[in-house]
Each structure stands twice: as structure tokens, then as C-alpha cells.
Amino acid sequence: MKLLCLLLLLFAAATLAIDIRFGGTKDCKGVVASCLNQAPNRCCYLPNGRQSSHISFGAVPGDWKITMRGHVGSNCDLAITAGGDSFGSGGNLQDYCYFGGSPAFIASGDYFFRSEKVDSSTNSPTDGSLVNGLILEDGTEYPLDGLDEDAIAEAVDAAFNGTIGSAIRKFKLSPLPA
Image 1: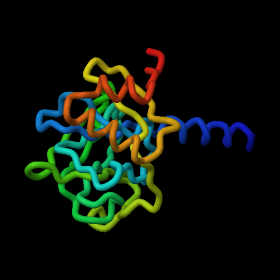
Image 2 (image 1 turned 120 degrees about the horizontal axis):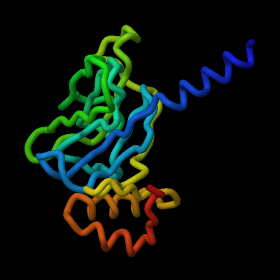
Image 3 (image 1 turned 45 degrees about the horizontal axis):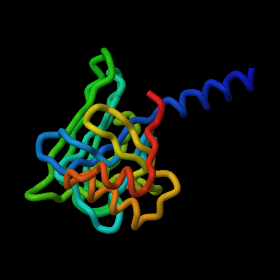
Image 4 (image 1 turned 60 degrees about the vertical axis):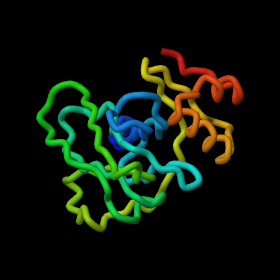
């Protein structure tokens, strides 16, 4: 019985993840840098002081009640510049997008379940991760595994300025299977 409970807990933890995405446009379109399958209460951040125009949270289960936040600082501990709540109304997976200041003020993001009864103005995740993927407009995902932070910064710049093809070739990135 204990083994079954442990297995169910591990399965639930594995499914409690969404993509946190950063983009260089104000319309939530275009190529994005992402923390793929980011767990709750973990900060996702852009490399080397980069900032984005929008932050989005992808594939949020329709019954989740979470608070999603974009931050000015790269470790989710400075001012919250964008974000909102999902209300758990049920249904399919949903995407949420929020905009930063002008021209760009979002450097990191996180989310947490509202049932955790935390003060959303001060709750800061204790752990973080650098973006680990790029997602093209057609949904193709390119993992950034094996690249150092400078190379990831260059790939993010290419994503935000429209030259992603050159970064894919330079770093020999391979798409994830569909």
C-alpha cells in the first residue's frame, strides 16, 4: 500500500509542470525561450541580464488554480511586473500571456498553487533554472541541453530578433520529436 501511494505521489509530481515562456514581442507571438516542464515554486530566468516583452504560461490544466508572475529581476525576487491568476474553471489546457513594461522588463517568472496559502507579494521560489528550450511559432521545440549560458544567451537573442535559423544551425540544435 505504501508503495502504491509513493508511486501515485511521484506520478502526480511529474505531471505538475507547465512551460514558462519569454518572448520578444508585445503580442504573445513569435519564437519564445522557455523553461520546458517547469515545476511550481521554481524560478525560470533568462540568461545574462536578458529581458523579454512578454511572459506566458503554456499548457496550464483547466482545473488548476495558480498564480503566475513575471519579475524584473533574474531570480524572481524583485518587483512583479506582470502576471495573474487562473481560476480553475475546468476544460482543456490553457495558455496565459502577460506583458511587461516598455520596452521590456521581464527577466524571470514563476507560478504557484493558490491553495498553498502564501503571500503572493512576497513568495519567492528558493530554486531556479535557466531557460532550457526554444519554441517556434509552429510549436516545434528545440532543447538547449549542453549549451553554456553564453550560448543560451546568443540563442535567446536570435529568438527575440528574428534570426533563430542561424542559431539553430550554429549550435546544431535538434527538434524534439512531435
